[in-house]
Amino acid sequence: MEPELLVTVRTELEPTSETEKEQQQEEEDGGDRDVEEDKEEENDRATAVKIAQYLRVNKYRNAVRLCIRAHTCFPESEMFASLSTLTPETLMYTLALIFKGSDEDTSELSQNLPPTPQKEAEKEGEEGELKKQEMLVQYLRDTETFALQVERAISVINSMLYWKTTSVVQEAVQFCVTVCEFSVANSVSGVRKMLPLVWSTDAAIKDAVVQAYRRLYLNPQGDTVRMKAQTLVDSLSELMVDASLGTIQCLEEIVQEFFGSSSNLQITVVQVLWERFTGKRETSGLHRRAAVLLLGMAAR
Image (cartoon, rainbow, N blue to C red; front, side, top):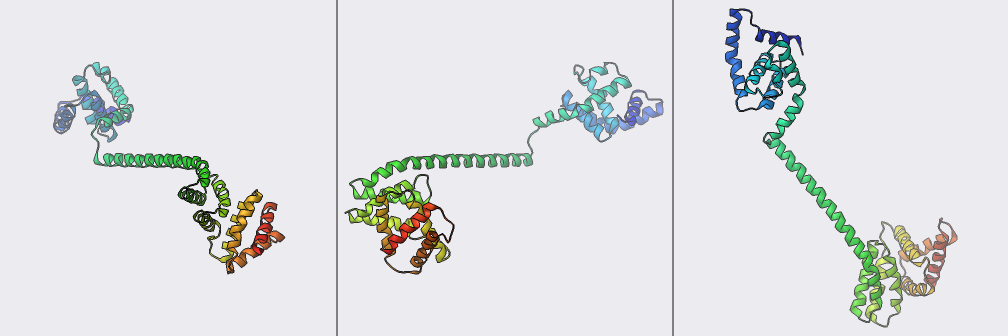
């Protein structure tokens, strides 16, 4: 503690003359009012916090007086027990103990104080953000569950492609196209499985399959004709990789329909296929094989 505090303690405990007593009495008229107010309706911990606050702002006289009065008000308190013998040493010890332990007391006291509007707003903001995060987590969980259910449904829908009911087959074809557009795992299996339906005697089913392949492979997206042709060739090549002879024969029906009319896109597609076949552009062996097969289909 600073020497000034020790001087204040000694002055409060040992007034040296009648004149000083009168001065002290006059000062107490203002200071003791605060002390009396602090003393009322407070417990020993709250009083200790108030003493620590006085010490922080260098109001040593108020702190000393309140500490002396606290022993009288709270004689059983452990904080002021050493003041049973009132000396400068015991008073300094008590003040030091209160000052060093005031942070913890202030924290405990602040927990019992009513929340301020600012704290309530901060709390509401934190609760709102927590609810948003909980909603986001729940949304992601629901999305994952839905995606897994769709993946499980693919094998079931694939088996419905060859039902005898035309409307059921048409809905199954539409499902296969949709999951393929969203790149769902194993969605290509349904696209390949419905390919033989291009030979169906049911005109509605055949038309549904042709429209499905046209939507998936023959209407590529791109800013230029070259980019569209590249996308179309990539898609058809992926479909033909590891495809059976029967699948290739069915795909030929779709490809021939595409090349049935001449346009800039068809011409560019042939150029891209030729570049792959000749090795002008670096590509894998499987894609070179797919390129030559597609060129053969286009020539027919």
